[in-house]
View 1: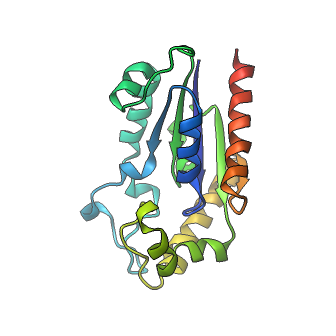
View 2: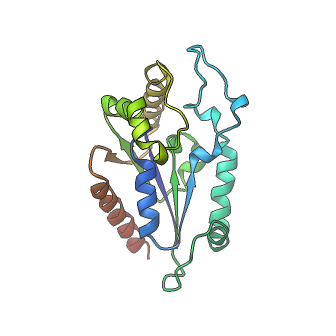
View 3: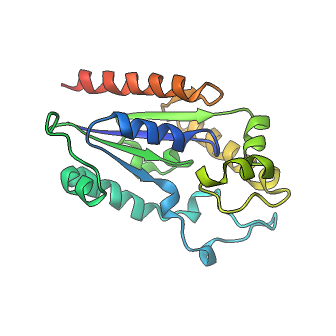
Length: 204
């Protein structure tokens, strides 16, 4: 069987950490990161706030991302081998795709493909702290960001865009399993792992 799991939610909510842990624990598991589909920097517009609009759906090549997901759906074994994933001989019929990103549920052509949708959140104060220069310097080797935020970016662009897309998701009735990003990594990992395993068992 094939299972597509979305690990979505706010910036710095713990999505990548959770995704990496799940990939190690689940059989025949591939990963697609939404961050890999940002358009070139010269195609990212500057908003009225003076900042590059990285945190909007239009800054992502979602058609290319959808095409990559469909390539996995069509031939998961071939996709896994091409991405260095070792297939498990004891579980050849199970294939799992984790899709990780901050705007997973705002692109409607992808919505119906998910078997499970998770959404990580942390409070405003914690999210801002995790994007602060000091936090960045402590964890820069583990982050996707190459530089800390310039002054005003978080309050002027990042947080408002998160609220906008979250409200749209709720308005459209997109069903997600909300995860508390303030929980420990281990607790979140075991919660989602058990849920995904139950989803797999119930699908047979």
